[in-house]
Length: 253
Image 1 (tube, rainbow, N blue to C red):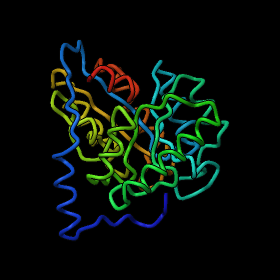
Image 2 (cartoon, helix red, strand yellow):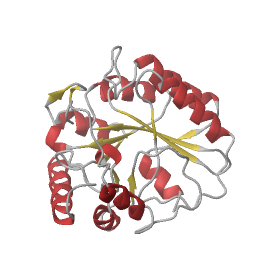
Image 3 (cartoon, rainbow, N blue to C red):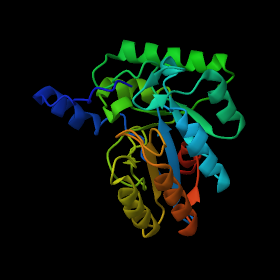
């Protein structure tokens, strides 16, 4: 992931593309009869602190998370810190966490053509397969940007693709462009706690939270160790059921 600030396409075409994307290649969720709300804790790009701190905290509460991996970033470093190595990704899988996909090189699906997207997805799955990680069923859009061509490709490849717009997943939500809440920046904890309360008050709902690094001094796209543990503990205290993203999709289909 580049340290440069991401600039969304604000052109008329970009706005139209995003509007059309919401209307096509939809996969409506069906969430009925849940005894309690679901919640997923996920990590995008997956820097090492998502393992050393994120996984540690989740496991302390007998929970597991979802790691959306861009395999082309393995072992590199950025403003998020060092990224997971292949051995660390395999370790996460062995410990029961879900390994899921980004694009291989953190490609922006909103601006790439279908062939380029499909090639990047294939590269990512192949690289993870070398590590022994197969059967990957879920995806998250890098930068959260979506296009009709991206949804067309992804709907044939994954059971669900997570985006970044804010909402709960309830019956009728599009699992090919699913909402999620970022727990990042100075207000990440407050935002996360607010949405936990919203999920708690909403029958048959599923809340997906995401961050990047989990450190004492995180990047603008990460959260502190205290914030992450506060949110995991709050989920337990509020009796939300912590599930991986793949398990949430299974329950919603």
